[in-house]
Length: 250
Image 1: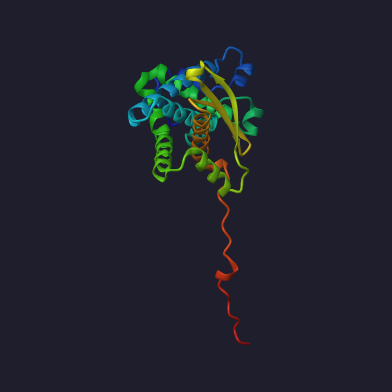
Image 2: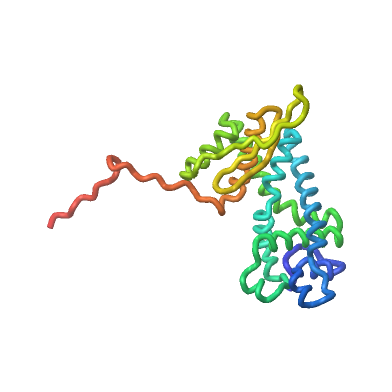
């Protein structure tokens, strides 16, 4: 049984290779594994996403498009795609690896390898038809949050601060990592750490601009992966508003 890739392979061995973990090749000398296809698929996914961002967000500049792509092209995202497509069930790997469950990194690699196999077998259209519907949802979510921030007038740093505060998490920590260029055209670089993770560095023409850019990246990343982050705690009902239950007469 083959995974649902909506493509009939002229060369089925490409798909077989895309679903073969290196541990299988170690146990079966001569059997090709997915690493070369994963290398190819990584670039193909990036190109398809870049093309989609360019076509659907015509008013965004290069920096905004780059931050959107960076927020979406993540191991966790590709692993989610692999799980949704049930690719893991078709992977050939060492028995112990399958028994313990495939880690996110392997699932993400398998997804990218399948994209590489599709591109080799069916060209750009086959790969795009497979990838674009998956990433389009992430692009739309990212763009919607970007529009919301613009509508409310909140900058990315404020929005990130509020997201963390709503979940009772520590405030983000910004670190200026570097400054490059001549005095009249300095470029500042900044990273941010929040919720046990670090993003960046991102750059800007000022320290504030660099901090805004990296905050936007972190916020988009957090919003794109809500399942792995805590939801805001429920607010307790103040005592004065609580409904008192009447005792029934005995």
